[in-house]
Length: 299
Image 1 (cartoon, rainbow, N blue to C red):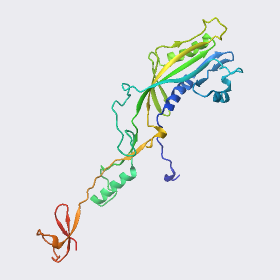
Image 2 (image 1 turned 180 degrees about the horizontal axis):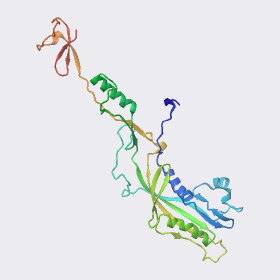
Image 3 (image 1 turned 45 degrees about the horizontal axis):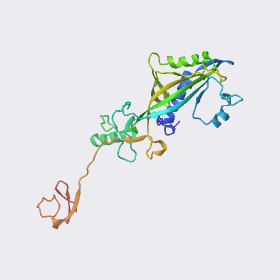
Image 4 (image 1 turned 120 degrees about the horizontal axis):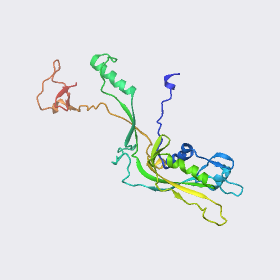
């Protein structure tokens, strides 16, 4: 395989979005905890449902979730995002507000840096050629070109999720609550992940129990427990409503050159005396004056 055909590795990070946080909490419940319970059909996985989904979509694509009377088959777990707040006292890692670069690209935080081998090698060969006459002479090269990638300033928000567990039997609700309580050990802190992003999560100390077993009416017995999770999430950029790129790429400057200024004047306009070069007569009409104030004969 030719070197030119090798694919360059892409950035492993996508923008952190509200939807990405939603998927992180959903995957944590559905895949990480991966909850099962004893049912009339044996030991079965409990379905996890994002409660904001359209009912028509659920009926068409998840027919096993409802019975012939269009009622949910229990046990079930639903997740709903119930709140979002932007608290200045919960700023996460970056307590200072890092302004973006004042150009059309923007970008505030550097996340990735590599050496541009081609440009760095070009500067090294040029200096070696000028100083030693050998472009590949081994010497220290201080003109290193870095290719740096930036992302927008992370904006931290606290997102609240309510996990609602519904069962028909006491044994089922006990089997499903205990993994939530014991997952983080003696603390209420854990990490959720999605698309290479990690979010700090905190389980609320109060677990709400809303059973109707003490109701002696003809209503169906229902064991209902709600667990609240607060996620300290960070959001990057405005997605499609942002006219700037998601990931900004820049290269550093390694050399600054300021050229001299030259002014072409006629010999008759020069009043100050100056020495003529050897072999040049004083009838030459044109001289140039440098920014240092010296005159150079050009014709």
